[in-house]
Length: 246
Image (tube, helix red, strand yellow):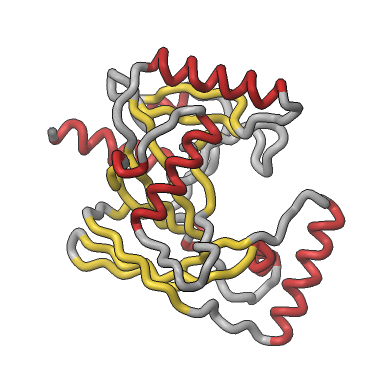
């Protein structure tokens, strides 16, 4: 099991995203970041300095949350390996897929990923819109979440059918935006995942997830072989508590 991290779960019914400029870096930190990134890419040439979003501030008022974010690239995460450098907080989106008995589907990262064997919800880092004039809003987050669910599990869901479950703030101040998908029979989810895996392998690709399983609570994670992401147990606790209140 993974080491327990202090993860904050933020209940929210409304999320507003506000764009700002990425925090400026000192020349010293920028040089160190570039050196660490170059070392990492030499060790792993598949690393890609693609666009991503980082959180610069998070404020809440009642059930409303305002997330201030900035455009950057994956290179900036190299600062996490630079002593004394500013904290870099990622923004990621996940989709919790429930089956008919209320359990949520989690997936195990495959050997080809950066965290093989780790269990998590389907999802990924948030990408900023390609055009600066485009807005990053909740509709775009739902679209990206639905895309991740389809690419990782094979389940295709209308983004408009996703509902906001909660936000989490974990290690490095990373912000997770978690959505809940409509209920599907477990056999349907497993069949669609099996079809996705077969298709990926037939095209010479390694699926991002090598296994899925539904879990009903944080306690059930003790029966899952392998580590899990820091947000998973507290988010499951929140989900279970919400269901018991219904």
